[in-house]
Amino acid sequence: MLGKRDDDPNLLNVHDTPLLISISYWNIASSFQYLFQDDLCWRKRRGKSCREECMTMSIKHLLIGCVAAVQILGITETTLAQDSWPSQPVHLVVPYPPGGNTDLIARTVSASLSEILGQPVVVENKAGAGGTVGMGAVAGAAPDGYMLVVGDIATMGINPHVYKNLKYDPATDFDPIIQITSVPLVLGVGPKLGFDDLDSFLKAAKADPELVDYASAGVGTAQHLAFEYFKSLTGIDAVHIPYKGSGPARTALIAGEVGAMIDGTLIPSVLDKSITALAVTSEDRVSVLPDVPTLKEKGVDMVYTSWHGIFAPKGTDPAVIEKLNVAINKILQQPDVIKRFSALNINLVGGSPKDFNDFVAGQSERLGELVKLSDATGQ
Image 1 (cartoon, rainbow, N blue to C red):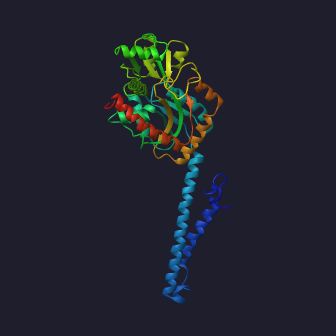
Image 2: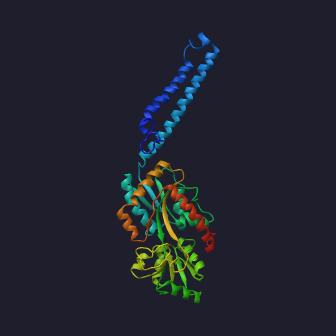
Image 3: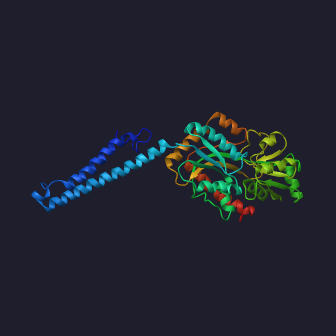
């Protein structure tokens, strides 16, 4: 049937385009036929009234032809964008140094995405200023589908509330493609404190307000906000010691330079017993740490998870967004990908661009409240 497509009966099929072009051509040609036909019509027969009728008919056919032509151009443009993209390598920006969870996520996804798209997906680390350098670079890139970015809880949810002169706007500069992860965090202590359970930790911290200091990846980061939230719910005091990234902060915790930390990258160090996990911040216990309770189990009403997703510059063709979303959803269902992330306590999410857009909007509002609580504004 003309204008029907198997997957969506309301959309025109690209194979109908030649027929539509013929219809459009006929209408435009007919309009000129009315305009330039010989004198038999209006001069020799009916005069002015026939001329007006011919002019009316010609304008009608011309308008129909033009409308059809515009529709065909729109169909062709969308189809070409979907079919021809990508015709060159796609660049996936990581706004942090190599080695962290964001970098790992990007490199894992890019390998399978290259195979599906038939073009290399090149991971680029553009670190600096809490992720704002890389995010700003992609925000200013052409919306052609060849420059994407891995955004996370910090760059898309926290930074807008922390930095006064942010070089990008998460709400207006990006098109969400897909949420990739939800990452429970671990409350861990190192040899400086040496506690084995949350109850004894909280009891000692309340008895000595100067006992606890904690590490984070920097002021206004997810780790910073998480510990400040934890402090507000438990009534303890703790001194914040910011480091330049999760890696240096974790190293300081293991070395005994600082006492505690809440982060999603602590599990390998918990498993090798260089850090002791007191609790996890998820709704349920995590599979790789089955003996570690949730904060809620211990009476602290706190659920707090980190997350990552992929974004494109605002204005990217919806057909390209959809193609990427479908491809990455498939990747997140691959058994080897699930196994790799599960071992690191990283839950895979997936879903539609709209799902991700709604999620980010809700997170931004909640995280703005935590930024005020942590007094991390004005950077």
